[in-house]
Length: 304
Image 1 (cartoon, rainbow, N blue to C red):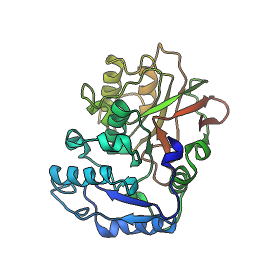
Image 2 (image 1 turned 90 degrees about the vertical axis):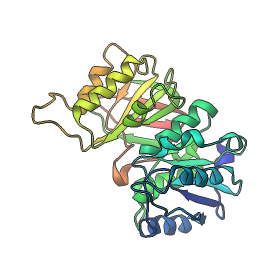
Image 3 (image 1 turned 30 degrees about the vertical axis):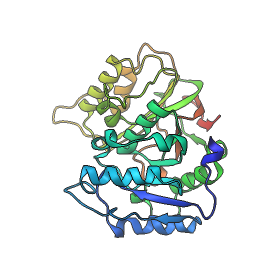
């Protein structure tokens, strides 16, 4: 499967906007960089539509995404940005042709809807990675990790290390990676897009949330059994957290630790995934990875 997904110079890729609206100026750096990688970049008609915050109406965004899913010439779909909106169109999408002719779907944040839905129903890999809205004029660790995943494949590209924290729970695990944005996982609970986390390495990350709401979401995952039988838990960026006038009393990382008390699988913090700007590294969802966690030496995740 991974061999089928590898890109080559000259391949056709496309931009999609299933969520918040984007402008030509915002997309220009990404288009230039993708072309510098030797790719043919399709900017589909209607990409820059707007309806309030969204990139056009639900029917418009769904139709554009459907065409790209079905187009066998397109080898990868780069979701332009997150924000909100993918959940409004997920039930309109038909993945039957995509299942027979898979391609990379790239994105994070709100694109967790696509990662989760595809993993649950098709078992096909997707890429949790930086999006065109985040591209600049020069390569970054985020864009380079994405380029390597696309052209070399995750088996060759994914081998990341980062510094430990005292909150880590040491151990190792080898299992498929699932998950993504915590708010999205929470919002998908009980829907046809909810993921099965049993035996998986679960990734969570989030941005711009109040600490009490992090606790609310973790309690929901806990009560629904999504934290019970993990192979491991990877906590990426918990970025720009907020507190109330009366403090919650625990940092976001401490809230996560409390939610997984009583379980004995590895838990690692500070992983380089999520709303981390230039340091949001590409990670394959639905593919098997090995995680090594320590609270005294560098932690590591690599494709198995």
